[in-house]
Length: 354
Ligand SMILES: [Zn+2]
Image 1: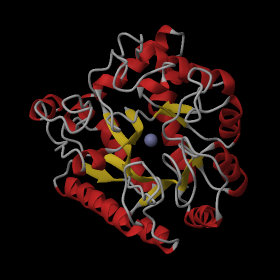
Image 2: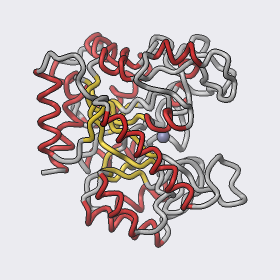
Image 3: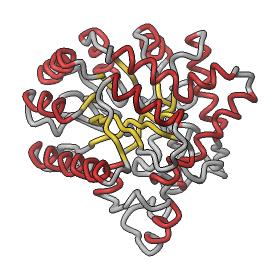
Image 4: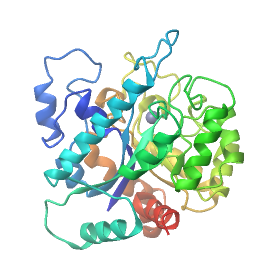
């Protein structure tokens, strides 16, 4: 089995207008005359390919940014609009449950039953399990919305995304957690919501490590060692996450894998960006940890980029399975490989939801 801890599935459905029940190649074909987004016709993720790759459990996001008038990033002009967008995304997940394509996983019993189904049942039309996560907390209009979201199944929150946020500043920004950010962490701790440390700017990251006493993971993050950018983790950040018994998800976005990537210009081939670069990052985290217990997969595939910005030897998400062989080539044991492909996320969730 494979677990992928970061996919923006509902964003693809609601903003890219992709019906993920169709195979990847059909969706690509449907988009061949569209030019509104750079990744049109280059998607890699859909339910049939998830099933073919035995990717039976994912962490699936809601995502909607609020932008103040001076913020040049794309986003919504009020937190209320951002909230409404996340509710549309939730409605899509619910529709996918209604047609048995997906199944929300909210607690340890549901997790164990779902893993059993994927490991032992030969029936090929198994629902893809999803744990609901919020990428960037801007859409939580105020702190009371955290419990509302918990009640419909939200189990992880990354307080920040790109730029300035209402609760915490994210990638390419700086600045410590504000009072709202601190209150958010407190409320997450009370409700046992997992903190996703991905995208927190350095100041907010270290603040969160001090203030938050609940369970922490980093759903999709790579190492500064290979691409020196604030979106990536320094060795010190990786070490504190290991100390907190976190799992870090390996992301498959080319600019995070090879240095000097130029968006829209560089190509995976020309930059020699293959899956081996993902293995370099996975191996680096394992070497810092001294074991294989703190890294998993959080591919972020189709997170506003497609094949044009993926490792060149990945055609669709089914190819996550190639990671196993590549790890074997580097001398990783079967147990280590299982840890990385799915066992670490399972262990983390079972502990968090005990
Ligand atoms: Zn992200």
